[in-house]
Length: 297
Image 1 (cartoon, rainbow, N blue to C red):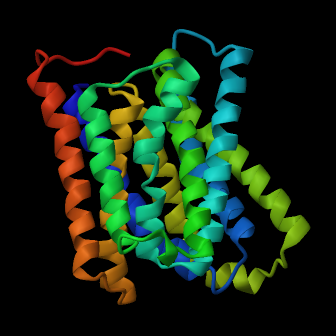
Image 2: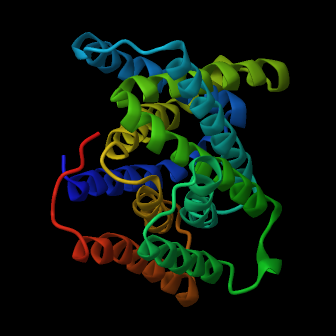
């Protein structure tokens, strides 16, 4: 798979995630955040497990205990990211949550440097700063407009940055992206349901009412999109992947306007434009300085 094809997969994942913000927001009318997280990742695990088993059967190398531990740590980071995002969306808009979660676009290369001393191309840093400017425009150019939900979304973005950096290392190293994704889902399902049982009321009627959102967030926003992320990151860097995945902010705004009637002021749409420019900078400038060739895992 070429780097361009991988980045297109990541762009598709961003679109699916953008729609997922609507499901996450509307589900909160029926169920608590941790019950929603637990059930959506149960659905994601069940949906993707057959593909992980097929991948395992075709693999020539067995995963080591160290690999499984790394997968579990990635899952814990995903759970933290999703939890803060889900708690945040209860007191902010779909549009704000989508854009502020996109802070991982600048946090991911920083996490990569901290964890692995991986320094991305200068164009990626440039693109990350352009994307950050887009997020700043969403807030009207002043931090005082950010709510508690917005700050929780930013905290979720930090854990998302670590998750992206870790996937970039281990998806490429093990060559088992679907198995990695399913392990992530299982960890999130167990942690989410455990906290739901301890902290939230559980009602079968409420679960039935939220079933469409749970199934979309589980099968598509969870199973499909996170697996596309794990596959795509085998063939591109984690920092560049973050740029393309940040398109979820644009899609969240579009779907929020279409389905929920949310509206962005002109300065917010200018922020959308900055995100799109960041994607082009991250892909085109490095491509001009290298020979076109597919990366190997």
